Image (cartoon, rainbow, N blue to C red; front, side, top):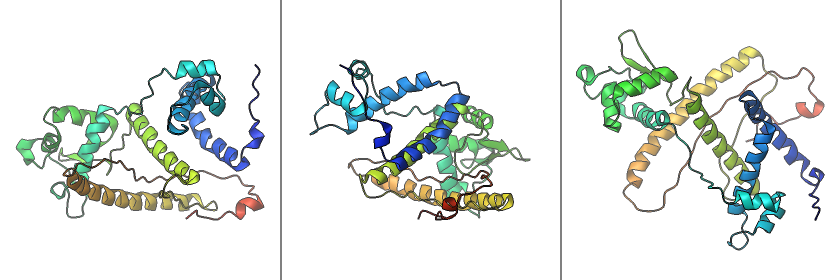
Length: 292
């Protein structure tokens, strides 16, 4: 039997245009890292089947191969093959990230490790120099199984920490943002983009109460203005992140005392800028400058 699938023209032109825009930076990354169209095609088949099987059941019952084929446009032979895969939603978290995020969270929220301006203190390297308020003491407060030397060497490699002129350990950023480690940066890439896209998708499909998903947009700025706004955005953004982090730590302590179901959340900040084409259409000029 010859199957003819619907032409792309039946879909919302606005949605197709938005998907093309969303996919361009991802395609750029894949091309830069050697991921070909053929590999992506197989990956997409797998994900289409996974999502269709999980999210589009009829009456809560498992879907048939025929239903999934109709829903996804993938041949039943491939459906049958792909349904045997183990689709795990568990994130692969590099050890440096799982340990590092906990340490930075403590360092940036616990008053013992903050200076008079609520900024992370430079910490003496060893307990013999600073007692509990040292980098060795900080690591020991989170885990007794990992030596502080191992953590510090990894942080220096990733660009998360550095030594000052007094040989104290200083945090380079107020959140765990690896500068060098690709696997560590890829973890945050996947985590943050997934949650941002999931919030926006939920809002479009009206699945739940709308999630916070806002931005401010201007396209007539000079390079100096963009640099100034980048600095302001980083400063204000970090203030918000640190405030939410501090509140979440206290709430998590209280929630540990009850046995109710657990939920996760992500609150993120992003900033992007690029040059614009000199020719700007009349329609573009009429765009609203924010989407609040």
